[in-house]
Image: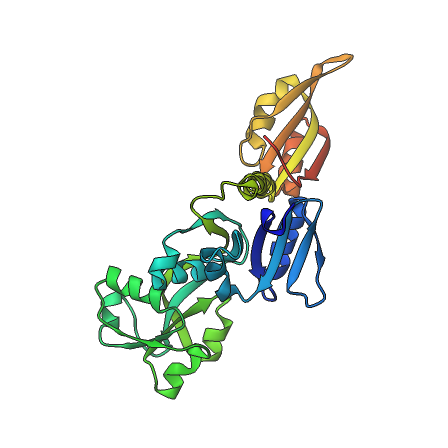
Length: 297
């Protein structure tokens, strides 16, 4: 294949999204060989390559056609769409990926009261996300001054350069350390797969569709468990009701034991010891709980 016949994915070189993104791609059956400069990873087995960059650069690389897809925070993608209207309009969130959860929030000094957005009128709000903050202010009809800062947003109120901030919040520990408290959530964020709304019409489009199917198969069952057990036929109703998530089980007859069946069910989420013990008391035995790596419908 020619080099640009290969699908190219941009992802964060180093940061909180890097390791889970690499793990997700590995679960999709992708393996890579890293270049000496550690900025490019050549795909082995599948025609998919990685470009390792700053997360803020990922939407632009997709918009300019340097990469076809990107793994990036929803906050970064939405900010680009809002502040680069000519390039960002064709970008889309193709899949939420279920990791890197955080939120873009407005925070105030701990001594300030907050009950509703109108209290922010006339205030100076420091942020690295002027597009998202501006959209939220317009939606709530709040006329406030957006103070653009590239870093150290949380210390702006203490320096007297802003009355409030709009910044990413995960655990909230940074806010507490700077005598701030969360007042309002602007955007709930997580890692997403970003790309153009129209996939490439050449081989890259076919590879992208294959990757999306694999992603769906991994994400769908990532927190699921496969439970296997032997169950008396007359206890099926009660045990089925006890299955976490209420799945429809698959039943198989047991040779030489017409009053018994083998039950198999894919349960969403974890299966606790208490749930297993409840099913055992109802008559189940030989129970196995297995992790599920992938599923192809």
